[in-house]
Image 1 (cartoon, rainbow, N blue to C red):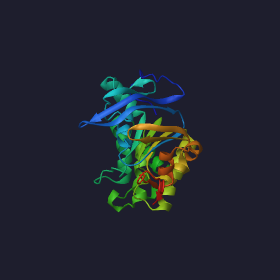
Image 2: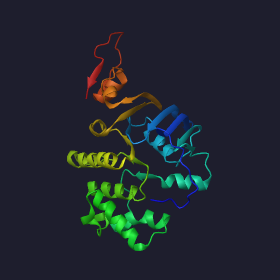
Image 3: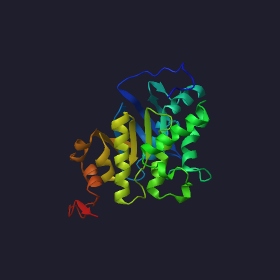
Image 4: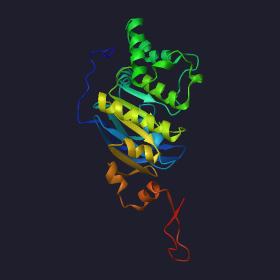
Length: 272
């Protein structure tokens, strides 16, 4: 889909997003501490780690919603936190965001929710907007619910409707905040399959923030593990799952480190 300003020029590289030395302090507390990442074009990149490790803050930086205290985030070769308002708007048009709770507007039908980005950011005729939105809903298996209000949808349907809205403008990259949160295992697997399908069929770069291990293992090409505001490890899914670092093992195997008692390591990990 054509952007409203044809003067925008993406600086195409293999890495569609680069994070360099990003450090963030909020309320006197360091949330992120020197984070470096490179997200490759066309991959499913998962950011995972325990609660409080900085995942959500990093996602806000990637989307341009929050500027870091130090460091840079570049998308398509442009520093989004040093960009002019006009350039930032154009960069955002090339990205989609699927919120954790869906964030659908309750007074609009599902179809109208998906139409909204098209109405706000393009000059397409109403008929074309309607058909484009219906096509996006069909892509996520939700065309039958086009005329329903969000209050009538199940949790999984809300997630899929949010994804349809996120891809309405044919973005280069889509960010997901905990896409499987609050879903039963079967519905979560359906959302995982949808993310993979959109990635494989349309080549959309997917960046998924999650602490759901099963979901991360199912969809990830590469994984970055955050720990106390830093990137503990970044690699392929298989590399991460085989990593011997005890902090990664504790997270992946859902084990709780136990401190030494009287100088004796009675039990290194307690399974929970």
